[in-house]
Structures are given as C-alpha cells and as structure tokens.
Length: 412
Image 1: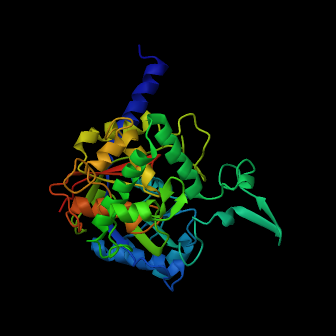
Image 2: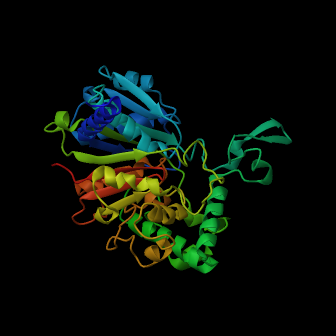
Image 3: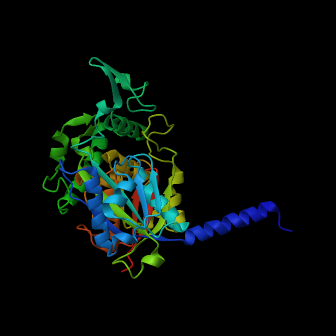
C-alpha cells in the first residue's frame, strides 16, 4: 500500500520533472544608447529598448503577451500597452529590489510560460540613472525636515538609524567595508587587495575598448592610472565603481516550442535560481560571513542544469564594484576561497583565460543598467555575436550574487 506521504513525494517529483522540462529561451534583446544625459523620458527609453528587442527577434509587437518589470522602474505596464499597442498582453507582474531583480524578472517570465499564462514575455529596465535619480548618491537616503536637520531613513543599512548618523549612506561606503572584511578574512595586505581589484577593473576596461556601446571605450586604464585614481571609499578607487548612466534594455523570453521557426536565434535558458538569503532592498553588514555574497547553496544552479563550474565558457558577474566580482568567483566555485585575487591577477578573466568575465566591459566600463546589460552580453556570447567573442562558447553564466542564470548556445 502506498502511504499518503509517498504519494505526496511522487506528486512533488512529478511536478518538478514537468517544470524542469518546460524550457524557456531568449528570443530577442535590445538596448538603447548609453549616455550621461539621454534627453528622453524613462518611458521613451523603455519603448525604444523593447522595439529594438522585437526587431532583433524577428517577431512583431503583437507576439508579446506578457510583461514583467522591475518594481523600481517608473514605466508602468499599462503605459507600455498604450504606447506600443500591445493588444494581446494578458500577463503582467513585477519584481522588487534593484540589481538583484534581473534574475527575478527572468524567473517570473519562466513561471508565466510554464503555467501557460504567456508565450512571449518582455522584461525591461529603463532609467535616467545619471541625469535623473542617481543610485550612488548618499543624500537620497536622508529625509530633510528643515534646512539644517536631516533624518536618517531606511530600515537596514543605507541611512538607517544604526549607520546613517555615522555617515554610512551609500553603496560605495558599504562595499568598501565588504572589501576590507574580505581582505581581513584571508590575510591580504593592501598591496595584494589593490592588485586584485585593479586586475578586475583593468581587464574589463580593456574589453570595453572594442565595445561601441561602452561609456569608457576610449579611456584605457593602466595599473599606474588605477593606483593614482581618486579614492572613493577605502580601499575602493574610482575605477572600482560602476558607471551611472541613462539608458534602457529589454529581453524577450519565449516558449521555445512556439518561438522556433518564428525568431532569428533562440538562446535556451538552462536554469534559473534565486533566493533572498542575502538579498533585499538594501545590502547588509549584518551577516555572519562578510567575505562572501552568498552561501554555498547558490551553487545549486549548476545541479539544476546538470553542469559544473568547469563547464562554463563565459561569465557575466554583477559588478557594482570590482570586489563583487572577486567574491562571486569564489561563491560559485570558479576558484577556491581566497583564490580570486590570484585568479584575476594571472589573467584568468581575460579572453584567453579560464573564465572570460564581463567581456563587454561590465557595469564598470560599459554602464550600469541595474545589471540587465550584463545578461544581454551573455546572450550575445551564446549567439556568437559579441565584440569580444569567446570562441566555441556553449555555456554562459550570469549572476547578481543572490541569483543566477545559465544559458546554452543558440539554436540558429
């Protein structure tokens, strides 16, 4: 006789198998010009990015029947329906948080397709992140009660009652503390830490030289340039930080069975995984281990796709600051704990290295669109279309720290 517990386990496994078999694919991508001042509204940027993604896919606008947005995005789903005439839109939702939402929008699009609520979902992020609200500015975390009184706001780290009164107001300051703790845990002196951070920044700047979309494509970075650059939040210097820009990007996520034959190239999504273990509206200082972004559980992304870190040919790692790249390399098992600095300094992030990383220049040298542009680069790599193409790339990895995506090579 089968017990109710056994039946429950069988039903659960049946569901998991059915969901795992429901693959989704990237059908198209689009990005606007990145600039310091777009001269456009965020709604206009969103529309431009989506139209570019649709053109890239070979579909038409009426193929879109789902919309997933970042909660932080000012462009509402209803605005897009009106501006683009999306008469077939029947699924819409949003994902909270900032850069960590990029994996979330893909996961939500996947769930919508798996449940039969949509066949082609557009995910987008548009922001005037330089001429409008700048996420790196500390004073935005303060509420002004009068001309001479500012109240620390927020419930966690940036500007919270426990940190704001002491001047901890911006991501740069928090990540400077992360870098310092990382060095302390492994016994790195300032010269060693600086060498690892510089290697990340210099490698990505070299990649950007070939990228026509990169904001710093014409600004080479030598070790001397790095060492003489302005200190922002010790030990992090100016080249260690992402670039606040105006721009927009969009991704079409589709049911491959429906899309095959309709689109130019399909890039299969092998696995999506995310958690809130260390995510949320504001990064924190209060975890037991601050030498890492996520726990070992983050590596389950590889078991979901039945691949290993050694199988990954190219990576895009969320690089709001350079130290996040070092930490993520260790978190996901691309090198051992405390080994990322040597990994970066010996050229392993370069095009001929073990793990070419952020080959478009990343958020440090291309520009910061809450990380979605990093995912676009992995798509280009899987389609064989990157300006810094990794030869024979078949598995691409993208992470924002507490979430990740694995992509396979394109189905032409």
